[in-house]
Image (cartoon, rainbow, N blue to C red; front, side, top):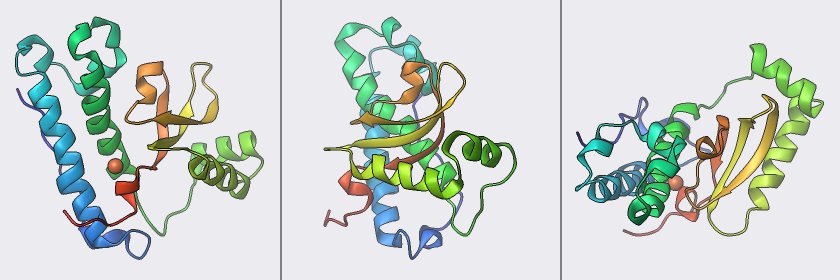
Amino acid sequence: MTYELPKLEYPYTSLEPFMDSKTVEIHYSKHHQAYVNKLNETLQDYPDLQEKKVEDLLKNLKEIPEEIRQSIINFGGGHFNHSFFWQILKKDTKFSGKISKAIEKKFGSYEKFKENFTKSALGLFGSGWTWLVLNKNKELEIIQTKNQDSPISQGMKPLITIDVWEHAYYLVKV
Ligand SMILES: [Fe+2]
């Protein structure tokens, strides 16, 4: 089995004007694809691990042979994090239901949450991600991860994320 780029469920233009279509296209078809390719290369000689879901690799890093562990963190994380990211992006939407109530309870208001989340993303030095997660105590928490480290490797459940790698917002020629 080889890992594949998941289908993007919307056209590249659908996040404009917040994310321009060219940036989304390159981010998805070049950057995310590169993580998938490198994950497949990493697991070339590990047929047993190829059978596992990328989530399972990242949740059980101790079981990954040491010589490929960092590559799984980088490329498996890159694949998982981006797959999650594409799924949660939507414009003209409003929080509602349980998550909305939980955010209000934890942060005071949605606006306050947005402020904290933005501050966390802007405060990230270098490349990484900002997340709203359900932590190990089943509480909402805003966290940052470096590079392609994934919260699922720390036993956390991701709920919302923002990619703070430069490739997510700065259009470069490829
Ligand atoms: Fe990215």
